[in-house]
Length: 396
Image (cartoon, rainbow, N blue to C red; front, side, top):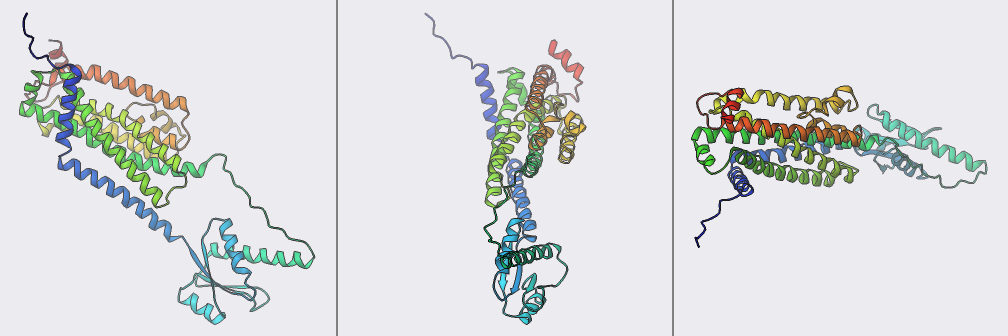
């Protein structure tokens, strides 16, 4: 009976080892930490800017000099009906009203009782406030005439407004999707570059020769893509949680359920987009042995990623257009374009499913063909390797 030696680790164990190595090395990388902080700060800064801009056209202050006190509630009711915020301030007389307007303590002052018709004092033309006050004064005048005619007035019913096309909610979702696509684009570039740089570093330092003595090239590639993919997924989930929490806390959205759904869609497309670009960047990086040559082999894939980002921004204005529709099916472009179309309500479920299937087919082809190029080029450390040479070396 012979003693059996230690069993060689299986493929899954080797892939996990490489993935854990990538996560542990990159999570301590200063560039990764700085990029994470910068993305979160930019996202929060964008939201804070939106709050400041929204505050600029927020509450209006209207002074009122009235005898019976009915105009104040009428103005507030009129403002609430059209979705405006008006703070009504009671003033004692016309002199106080003029002084308050000139000192910009109020945006306008309404004088009732000084003449046959109420008078609105403004420092400058304000069409919104003029229309608001005119509607309130007209409403009070009509009520007076109906009461004088003996008509019994009852509380008027509020009109329930339902938008059949959901355009208001879709507008918020498209904005969220665009912000998500910007973050998605940045993370795809960042992590695909991490994969490519790692491949070149290992080739230049000859570490890859030691690694390939214990594992196959596809196991090394799978571990790299999986490890950095998990790190990127964790980062985009954290960014999504921070973004959703901040948007709800700052009251920037009215439909939290739809917001979460849009963020989840962006996260799901990140997984597909990362798998696609990480494999492409890794295969391209295996063709060179120096960091200086990395830019030339990554340019085609980088241009595809940039093109998808540009089309996604344009799709926000015309999500149902021909350009947005066609590119939302193109592998490599769809992870950036399709989330915008989904947020705008322009993508039917079968269209999303078709885009996902095409992405999965493209990823499978890249893994199969690109894996052979990767295996053939990984040990060739003398200059730049052509794809044909790498395939020939892999067959040999």
